Image (cartoon, rainbow, N blue to C red; front, side, top):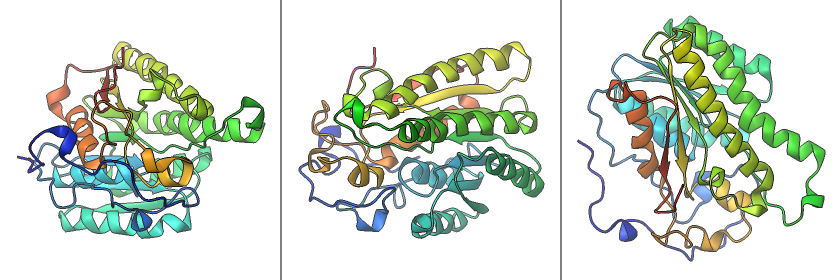
Length: 296
């Protein structure tokens, strides 16, 4: 069982206003106030992923970190992709939590806009473990803009390369190493349904991920590979990306029906379900975790 907090969900975690705490992207967890909860002290596994191997992009912090911790405690070995030296602190901490669970953690640092790097991560994962059972395409980039004229070609392309192209690269190279019953889980967003105009490039990629997920799910069932493809659509979640990219982060999440942002620990169990055999009849689905925001 999972020893999560109990009670009115509106009152389980801190609510805004939060202290102003601007960081440079991509941000680090140790500089955040309040500190995000990744399930370090609360998640107790049930052996649902024993013997499986998972690749998690953006697994150093935020939702990816919580998913890595949860999957390790469910019995999976975890491969974590992250980008910059500044994220070493978070990545090493995630690795420590995984190894404390008795599982193996591999770290890969680099820019997944590079197709060659994505292939290398897949190839080295297979060389080490012989297979891939779970692919979590979670890494994302965002910046806020008030005017479309302020968005450069470079910024637009960078957002799509990180959020969409890397996802395609990982699927392209991982597929042949994934056996029937394996699971691909893509992180989309509530922005796919209710886009924030200040996050125009980011929101556009999240809508594209919805379509990508649905198309892949049908393709992989039709071609007999038996790989399930689903997505998770988080609402506002308190991660290092927020104080480093959202100007008014002091009020982040207050406009949800719950009146607060989600914590990574509250999102990770959705990924565990989709990765597990319990979700054997679920493919092409998107599961919202939005703090009550409508996604229809």
